[in-house]
Image (cartoon, rainbow, N blue to C red):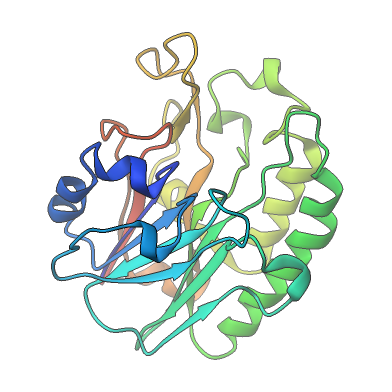
Length: 250
């Protein structure tokens, strides 16, 4: 099964920037979208063989996730089951025969780190608890915009960004805790080298110069490691400040 994930920075916007073609050519069985900034009734598009599942934020034009799937899931769940965390549409879970796919858009702590405490002390533990609860039933694939560069190798200019949003010690430690719960960063399972990023600022020609961050991931339960066939980043796919990432299992 091929799973692709992309922070599209606006579902309605991406439709006019080549998304239908990207979807058609992706070969994805499941295509997870983050930061959709829309409700279902605002997106008029035929997704061909894909059915679309939604978890929009209560706040208009903000956050939200959507998952496109070729085959009907066993079940679809919105949120993590905690009111304090579920109003922003950040988690959408589709259950298939052999595993769950958790589509997640992790909160950004903000330039002034205003949401740092919430992100690492409230959201992080609650999300890990939710995923581990799923894992008691079957393995889990967690994919999406996790809004953190885990290690120095995961951004072009680590020294200049120490303590900045997405590269604080607290956020990095929180991601380490997630991996320590029994998950594998699939891209790093295959690729140990530098220079691979998934997000670039719109400023200063960052993307053509590859001055980026790897903050989008596909992580899998350790029990799925033997099923990993590939993990990929598609940096040439334009239309958002992020690019698609994904994993193939078989």
